[in-house]
Image (tube, rainbow, N blue to C red; front, side, top):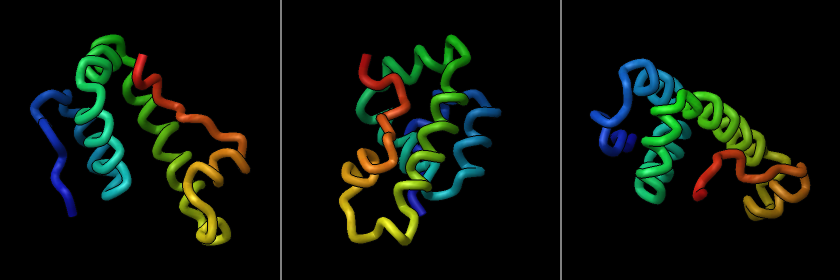
Length: 90
């Protein structure tokens, strides 16, 4: 299992939320932090991070359902009418 990147930048309650989502949550949080650190910090500061994170993890889970295993992730998102939920980048 991968480790959370820059865990000290997250408040304790957000770290717990990320870690509670296991590999999916840590992977998503790391992707966001590696690509959009300033935006992540802004979402944390404004209290919007948790909502965006929960929504995105749910989308990731739906896109990984077995009935869609033959499709690329972007095809599943299109099929299900999903968009990238996180306001990244902005």
